[in-house]
Length: 138
Figure 1: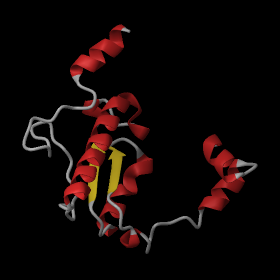
Figure 2: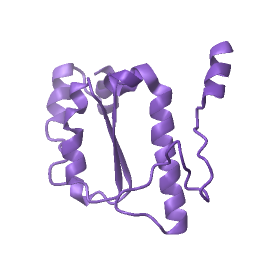
Figure 3: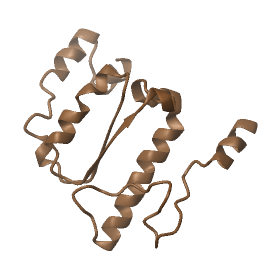
């Protein structure tokens, strides 16, 4: 709330909420043309409408639901930010590669843990177990 008020220059929570009422994607989502990553967390009521947005998109897109079992089921995947970063940035890497080769499809590719978009070589996650262990020790 504080960030939203600051960004929009609102002086109160009420003013900020009033400012955001006209901001809807209804009728606009289908006009989005760039590849789009949409996600939600299973226990986050704020992201509950993400499937509606995805249904309206006509651009290349990826929809990911983060789960409590992964430690990422709450708002902004707060319990597993590295997992969010790995998935979203991995998706973005796939989009970049697809744009470079002209192979962008309706559903933009997301590298899986099994295969990379790079010549069929195994995909190396951005934040693999080795890096996470090093970060924990540091």
